[in-house]
Image (cartoon, rainbow, N blue to C red; front, side, top):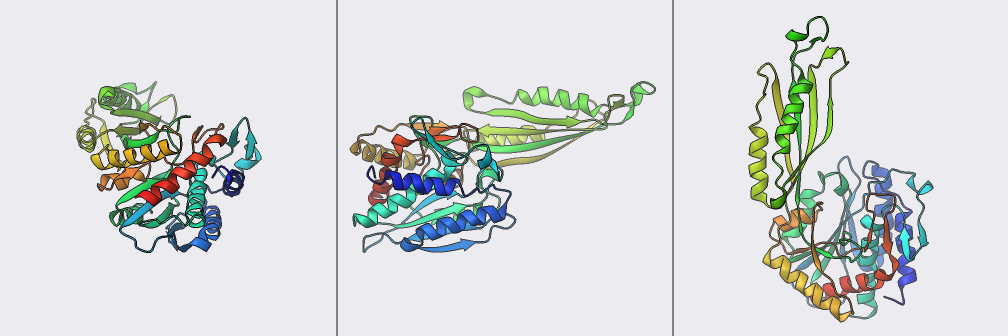
Length: 372
């Protein structure tokens, strides 16, 4: 892989320069076609309808080895958070020992690594004991609404899942646990009145919401990995009108599924401080936590041993963010996340990967496919 690094870099550039924001199905489909063309010589490729999103891509890899026992699912996503045209202000470039550009880290490098790992296994005629599927979803960055059933269907048929998301930090730690993610929307309805002429007859939805926000902030228990963040707040129409309506959008993160159930119960139990106001709560958990199981630890230990054979020490980590690996782990399928790029700046202007970690990371994916 060290000898092929320039080729890997060229493919990462191709992928990054084919922009694919979640909300542009045509752009995502262009990227899906690019990946399809890239893997077609070594895979049976099909696409699946993504509803209002782009197409999902499923590739059954043709890898060496006569007898195949079980299935390995390599899981990734084709969509990015970057709007079409971002390349004009944030072009792909090589500098300071890194590759820079929108989507480079999250997660087009990981897809390129998988492609070259598969090519290496074929070129070196290294037997792969399991059937290998590559699944790229088109809506991961916006909640996996369309792709979740497809992910879960293929995960249930697999003995292990490798998630091509980036590793944690500049050390590239593998992810053996992720927090569960959810969203709640709180809508408060009060009674409008003129704030100068008829103040007393009004019931402020904004004031009620402020009290509710202060209350729900107390649901956070950092020692248990539970966080509650009212991230978006809106309400009222004019400063001289007692507000008739206000709302808050709240992000929740949990370490354990049981904590999500307890948190949901608290949200559903919210009652107005001002009896003249009403409260409506909607939402809930949309990604279950990826809990660190015995199967996940065993998979990590295998990867750690294989990495040492490459002269690399890898550690494990917990991520506060979610991925499609949350869904597969919640089904009880051993899932190793973060096997993709090593870098920093996902979703930020400094998004980049370390060039000197391309070869070992690609080799590790190849070794895992050959070992599982």
